[in-house]
Image (cartoon, rainbow, N blue to C red; front, top):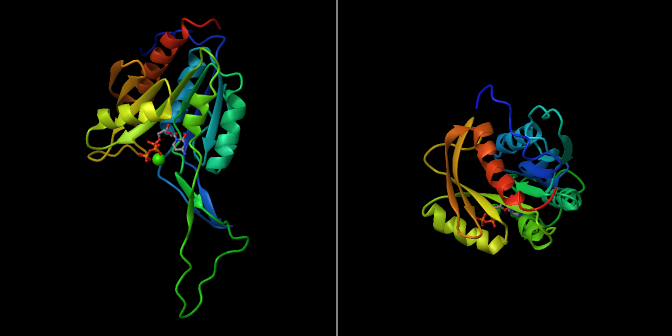
Length: 228
Ligand code: CTP
Ligand code: CA
């Protein structure tokens, strides 16, 4: 599509994209985190702007230039991401959860820096579950809106993806195979998009912008029935 004017198939739509990875604090200087770069989520935001959408990008701990034309909301933790996503989803036509959300957070966040003491073992870290934001967005979605998630899987990736899609109750899931090659921080991606009704679309290896455009093709097709 190089040089081609992008389709304005998302004109009049509000789309929400989450990107990056949450950080769950242990104390004022330390956190539990993950390796998500945010590049696929930023590509989704950038391409949605190009296709005419109003875009809210909820960014968790990314170090990437803000996509021109998107409203960026910065968050740190899963609970902050949840609050921002539920608020932005209030009038959204589509929500795409590309962020890597920590499944657990430390049960307590120490007010002061945790110090070591000679001859003493460290206190174990107790973790508690974070809420499942995607499942919550799917359960509360506006009529006609599209809720999408991402899943990085190993082994039987499609079977795992199907089970996850059903569990989350979302409309579609972008499934990546992980393991052999690196996905984290890479410039390219490939995926299979599975839809709740059974549809399966292979997205060939390409830049993260190209992959993002194929995802918006599917979201746009699903939205086409619903008035803007
Ligand atoms: N997700 C979410 N809230 C969470 C965890 C995950 O919204 N607390 C979203 C992610 O943003 C992603 C999708 O759910 O879009 C799938 O994430 P994944 O970690 O694969 O799903 P989990 O249900 O956490 O399953 P697993 O035990 O395999 O990690
Ligand atoms: Ca998880």
